[in-house]
Image (cartoon, rainbow over all chains, first blue to last red; front, side, top):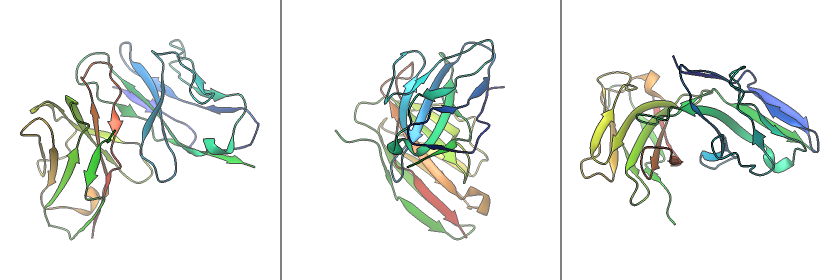
Length: 110
Length: 114
């Protein structure tokens, strides 16, 4: 079965500190992994996807197939990074439906 | 340009009432998805359309849930005889084509069943 696990519901760090949001997945095959973000009063939006290997707003995520993880990292947190973050996966085939984790609420303290 | 829009943004229904939630996808987007997001949870897939064809409805929780997209554009999610457990945010997303394109989400409709 496809499953995404985000072990931390809440994460609080100080501005300028490194951030790591954890994501583990289970999937029989080769999924595509995503991070979505939802800022306060805004809609869910794509932050990054592993296939594009981009760095968005200073965030990066590396797919580790051995550990089935796709942790999101940023070396120096900024206050505007405070938001809800969702890890998600989809298949490269079929309906491309997204399977989401429960989300992590990140708070950056000044 | 205009993004995905949903209406109404908020809906309060008495248990047993029928509700209809509307999604206007981005113009030209072939694929349309509905997700249900319960409080404190991530979104969960309900159903998927490619143009007017409903290709996957495996996530619909019961036969009280019905979705349509008759002209391949606007979609409606209908819930009959609403129950308290139907209370959630219903999200619509569209993408250009199914394979590998980014899904763009609407603002959601928050449904509260009393």
